[in-house]
Each structure stands twice: as structure tokens, then as C-alpha cells.
Image 1 (cartoon, rainbow over the protein chains, first blue to last red):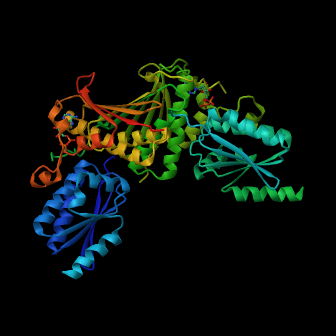
Image 2: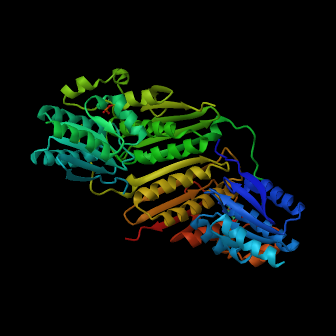
Image 3: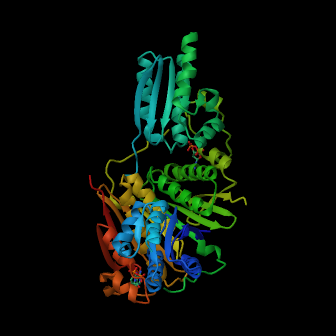
Length: 122
Length: 122
Length: 154
Length: 154
Ligand SMILES: Nc1ncnc2c1ncn2[C@@H]1O[C@H](COP(=O)(O)OP(=O)(O)O)[C@@H](O)[C@H]1O
Ligand SMILES: Nc1ncnc2c1ncn2[C@@H]1O[C@H](COP(=O)(O)OP(=O)(O)O)[C@@H](O)[C@H]1O
């Protein structure tokens, strides 16, 4: 009743993989987010955007999951960006220090454009 | 703390008087609404629009106040219209039967236009 | 992170949320907002959420005004019980005034009301019009209790 | 219509709202929504409301997970006390696990967390960063209690 499931989707835009999150990013989201990350990594993703679509509830357990993704991203030598966060969650992500490991963009298009520059430079 | 005051304003648009309500329409609104009605009536108003601006809380005590206004409007031979209600409160006003005594319009402009036709015909 | 331990079935008791409010007009808005937040999260369409908001505010207002006679030392207790079928909301007061059964069966009529000095009397009728089920009883604590049910149609 | 009897001053007790929740993850959202509805009605700006939402959800989540160890028979009680100066929110659990004082003073650091297996430990720190005052104590019922205060600056 009260536990919204998180919807997670993956798609590609010219060399950049996007993981879309729609819903609550809490402890219940762990499997879905980890699987989506493993899926795009399995597809050979080097440039990844985690794109939040109307997630108005992200808690510290959700942040812990994303830090877990950052750990793997660093290990795999991938590049991660985050988009679609509300001003509040942008602030929280900066406070926590996630912004040091993943650039934060307001919109998906900006995030993709920034990563595509790196694709082209590579 | 928890009792928002209702803001009530009065203004005129070419022969039609408008009573603007902004905030909660509950028992606490009685004096403000009654005074505004008496004020425009004192100015000689014949055509009156009660215009709700973002009143997302109207309860049965508020409806009772508006029925009180209708009683006076009938007694004085004035014409009343109501505008600016959400779909929900339009439904409630129809259920209660207020729509038999005051035409209900989505927007202020429509309400004023309808009453102005009557002004011109008079 | 510990395993979230999410059981697949839950007894009714575990889904019960209780809200205690002071008997002071204005606080019915807290019950209204809590009800609508729950109903939205349960997936009720917005017009049903609006109906629930009005019904809850009317019931809590009556509990404050009539049942507890504005005695601010008295509490109004609102209990929300969610299930897959919908939401049950119980509103209980401390019964300074006993709810008269006749009052629960009135069909107010605007023609009559316009002639009368009391322009009110719409609250209970509105609750019954807007909710799927409404029952009146005596609360375990001795006061008046109004139960309203709104079904999730899917 | 009866006189609304609105007193001009009110003791603290009359402004207290209590919310009882089952110890099950997900229900922290009800507390979060009730808190934000109250804060909006009290006139807090939206960024402060967002901060309160996060702080309340973290405190209630801790009460469910740690204090009550997901035991759904145990309740989390959230008490909201509004005043002209702001809002006090007390979150109490039934203390199956006693809150360790050291845990309330940790300053988590992302470099260290990235090396560690436990990526968590941000909740209490976030509450302290986002709220104006935070205190830990033992609840009257014996469990852990976290009090957070958010001031209305005007
Ligand atoms: N909780 C209650 N306790 C005691 N009496 C009540 C309660 N709720 C309603 N009543 C009685 O029922 C009557 C009708 O209530 P309602 O339809 O809400 O209209 P109103 O409150 O405007 O009179 C009230 O006037 C009151 O006498
Ligand atoms: N209500 C509580 N009861 C008992 N212990 C608690 C409570 N809240 C927090 N703690 C302890 O404090 C620690 C830190 O909490 P927090 O900062 O929220 O991070 P996390 O919950 O991710 O571990 C918890 O791991 C737990 O040991």
C-alpha cells in the first residue's frame, strides 16, 4: 500500500547510457538500481547518466545505494553524471560529497551533452 | 499558527462588483465575507461575483456563509455569480444546490461577461 | 545495509496510523492533509482524494465543535487503516455531546435552508454523499465515532 | 452557527499533534507528509519544508529500523508542537536497541565511505545539518527520542 515501487529503465543516447529512476529511492530500490547498473556495464557502458524522473523521496539509504554505484564506477573506470534532481536533492548530494564523484546537472540533455564531449574526445 | 486568515477584497469591473476570496472559507471567514457583501451593497451593487482565488479549503461552514449571502441577494433583488472554484468545489456547490441561486463559472472573466450582458439589458 | 525485512502479508493492526488532534478548529486541516497524502500514495485518483479531504475535514470539525464542544483539553483521534481495497478513516471524539441519530439521517434542502436562520447542517450529508460507506457508533473511549470508507476501484 | 470560540492565546499542550505509526518501512512517508503539510500551513518557505521532510523521514526510518528493529508490533510516535517561533518534532521509538551516543556525533566522510563496505551512516548527520536544533534523549516510554526544531524566521 504505502511502498511505491521504483521504476528503473535503461536506454542509450549516442554512446551515453541512461539509467532512469522514477519513484522512491530508498532501501527497496537497491536491487533495481544495482541490476540496471550491471546491465549497462555488461553492455560496455563507459559513460552513464543516472536520471531522476520525479523522484521526490530520496533518503539516506538511497544515497548509500548511489555511493555503492560510484564505488563500482571508479573501479571500472567509467564516468558518471546525475540529472533530474530537485534543487533540494541537488543540495543534499553536494552536502554528502557525491558531487565530487559525479557531476550533477539539472536536466538529462545537459548531462548527456557533457558526457558526449568526453566520448568524442576519447 | 494553523488558522490561515481569509483575505477578502472588493473591486468593480464595469458595473459588476467582485468580491475576491483568497484563503480558507470556513467559519472564521464569516465577518470578512459578510462585511464585503455589505460594503458592495452599500455602494449600490446589483451584479456581484464571488471570485475564489486559490481557496483550496471550503467547508460546510463556509458554504453556510455563502447561503447566507444568497438569502440577502434574493432579498435585495441582486444577481450573484460565483467563479474560480476548483472542479471539486464546483461539484460540491452543485450538490448543495447553490448553483440554482448563483451561476457558477470557471473563471472571473466568464462570470463578469455573463453579468455584464444583464447590466446592458437592464 | 540490513535486509529491509518486508513481509509479504500484514495484519490489519500493522497498517494502522493514529493521529491525535487538539479540539480546536483549524486542526481538522492536519487530518485532511494526512488523509490526502495517504490516499495519493495509495493511488486514489485526485477527485477521490478531494472527496476524502472534504469528508475528513467535516467529520473532524464536528468532533471538535459538537462532540468535544471546543474543549481544548479534549482530543480528537483519527485512525487510518489502509488495505489493498481502500482506506478506512475513523474519527472519534470524547462525547461531551452525544450524537443524535436523527442528525445522521437529515437530508438538508437548500430551499428550506434559505428560509431558516441556521444555514448549516450540510456536514454529515456531504460525508455520506462523498464516501462509499459511513457508519456511526460509540467509540471504545465512550465518545462518538464516525467511520468512513473509501474504496480503491481497480 | 455557534461562535467559533477562538482563544487568542493557547498553552503548548493544546497545540500538540501526535502521530502513531507501525514500525514498517514506508510509513515514515506519512510522517514526512504530515510534517510538510503542517510546515506549509505555518508559512515555512519551500526549501525549509524540503529540509524538514528529509529530517523527519530519516528520524522515523531510524526509529523503525534501529530503535524498534522492524518489529511491527512496536510503534513509532511522532509529536508535532507548533508555536509562533517554529515547529518541534519529537520522534520516539520503543528502544529495542538503545541509541549509542557516539553514533550521534559521527561526521561521515565520503572518501572513507567509498572504501568501506557500509555506504550508510548519513541519517543523523543529515538531520543535524538540516535542522536548527537536534537533541537526543530517552523518551518517557523508555525508548530513544530525537527532538528536532525548525525556526520560523520572520
Ligand atoms: N461528533 C458529533 N458529536 C455530537 N453531535 C454531532 C457530531 N457530529 C454532528 N453532530 C450533530 O449533528 C448535527 C448535524 O451535523 P452536520 O450535518 O455536520 O451539520 P452542522 O455541524 O452544520 O450542524 C450537528 O448540528 C450536531 O448536533
Ligand atoms: N532510533 C535509533 N535507535 C537506536 N539506534 C539508532 C537510532 N537511530 C540511529 N541509531 C544508531 O545510529 C547509527 C547511525 O544512524 P544514521 O546516521 O541514521 O545512519 P544509518 O541508519 O544509515 O546507520 C545507526 O547505525 C544506529 O546504530
